[in-house]
Image (cartoon, rainbow over all chains, first blue to last red; front, top):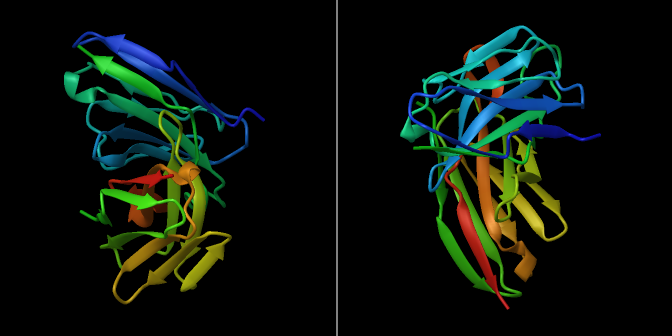
Length: 117
Length: 115
């Protein structure tokens, strides 16, 4: 198993540009989530999904969209990039029983470092 | 909103000493408390977790204690080694939106173990 795979690993954008961070997992996990990590701020939840077709907002959802058309994929879209979105983004997944959400260990991807100029 | 406070933000110990990191949480409904270790440039990885029906859990040199009444939990690392140097994050499950189980993280503790 590859686990959780994120692409790209690095990206530089100009203010106002849009882009999509890709996330895929091959562990048949129902729960998937996106976090951003900023120095001294820990990991903050952006959006999450408890199963295909179901998404919801986390702590810091503004400026981001997500969709979950399949169990495997959970892309994160930046609609109009701003310098405040410069961060390291982590996708994470976990086993979930019947759409109840995360019930245990989160498996993280390697992260995507985004710089917005 | 709900939050998790983590202390200290940095911790330096001599090899062989013990290290303790403490967290407090605000949501009384939280029932799952994991700890993650993140080495420089790497992804966070789970090292130990505890559920609200247990007061203490141990795994070799690592232990976690939970005080539900006081809403705090702690990570204890004994006989520290240089490879324990990393950033450690505590987390607590919260009911967010329609789902119980989303994790809210503390801001992290940078542990340095000096040989």
